[in-house]
Amino acid sequence: MRKLIVHTSILLFMGTMLSCSHTPAAKKVVIASVNWAEGIAMTHLSKALLEQQGYKVEVKNADVAPVFAAVARGNADVFLDAWLPVTHKEYLDRFEDKLMVMGTNFQKARIGFVVPEEVNISSIEELNAKSALFKAKIVGIDAGAGVTSKAQQAIKSYGLQLELQSSSEAAMLAVLKKSIDAKQAVVITGWTPHYVFSVYKLKFLDDPKGVFGLAENIQTVVNKKFMASHPELADFFKNFQLDDAELSSLLASLASSPNEQEGVTKWLAAHQDFAAKMVSFFKPADPV
Image 1 (tube, rainbow, N blue to C red):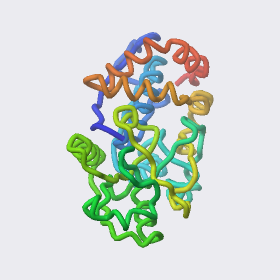
Image 2 (tube, helix red, strand yellow):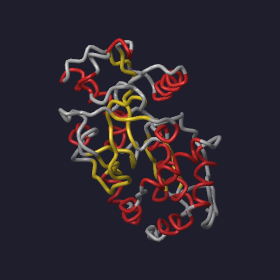
Image 3 (spheres, helix red, strand yellow):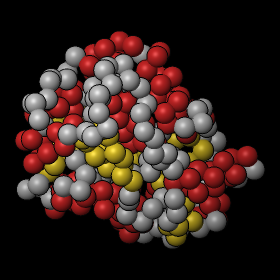
C-alpha cells in the first residue's frame, strides 16, 4: 500500500518472446490492484513471472471496493491482496457466487492502530486519556479500505473521542514521517506486512475487544469463469506465496528502486530459487 502504480510493459523475458504482435485471449491476464505496498509488490512480481511465460498482463488500479466488483464482473481476472477472514470478508460474501480464493500469499498479516514505539501508550483503551497528545485525530487511508472500516468500528466500540481522518496511504505516511521527525506523537491505521516497520520503530496498540481481529492471511481471489478457462494457471496462483523475509526484502527492493519494474527485476535476480520454483507451477496453455 505505497506509491502510485507505474504501468509497465515487459518486465522480464526469460522465456520465448511471442512471434507476433497479437496476443491470444487465452494468454492475457488482467490483475486488479489497490494502491497498497504489499499488493503492488505481489502484483508486479506475479506480472513479471507471468510475462516470462508469454502472457500479456494488464494491471488495473482502483480502490478496494471497485477492485472486488471488477474481478466479480470479469473486468479483471485476479486480485492478489485480499485480507481474510476479517478485513475483506464483506466483499467476498457479496460476490461469493462469482469469486473464489485460490491461495494464500502471506500468512499472519495484521491491521490496527499503530504508534511510534516511544509513545507511552500500549492499548486502544488509553487513547481518550491521551487524546490531546494525538491532537484528537487518527490518521487513516482511503475511505473504502478494510482497515478504515475496522477503525470506524473501533472508534464506536471504544467510545473514542478522536476523529478518523481519511486520506491516501502516501499522505498518511507523510504525516507519520513528519511527526516522527518532529518527535511528535501520532496514531495511524497501520498494517503488516509493510516496509514502514523496517524504517521506523512502531508498535500496534493492544485491542482487548478484538475489533481488528486476529492475524489474517493475504490471499489471491480470482474470477471463477476466468479460472475455469485458464486451468493452466491454477497451480501458479495456488502456490504463489512469500514468507516474511521474502516479502520484506521485496518491499524494500521496490521502496529503494525508481519503479516497480526495476525493483522486481533486482529482487528476482537475488531470489532465483523462488523464480525457478514458481516457473515449475506453470502448465502449458491449451492451443488457441
